[in-house]
Image (cartoon, rainbow, N blue to C red; front, side):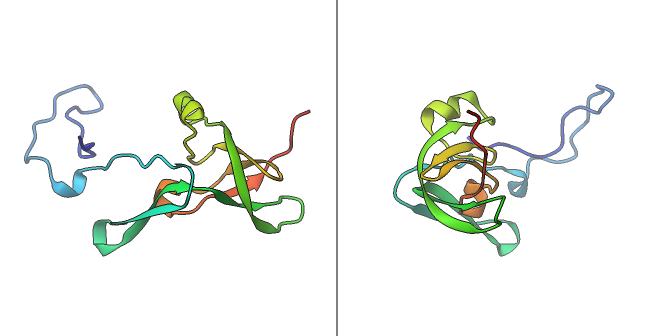
Length: 129
């Protein structure tokens, strides 16, 4: 079922807003893309204005930037450690922006939006030992 992102049925004061029209197709949202670990799988989606978004369904590598040196490299993802977006995403291994992932060279935090950008960019995070 699509999410509707139009006007609220209430004013900020709590008074009821009378609708002057029905829902419009451009106000309809879409289901969230839940990126998981696996062989790379992309879907191209046409969006408003004829533009396109790359929906990343699965990925096995991330572009990790080292904060100290400023250099980036493609590194294999081992597992999802923590996802602040949703507690359930930790268990299911879903990658979203802000997710802490474990890579071959240590922990990293995802800075891109894989479900909309089609790529996993991350920055290295110090290990707390």
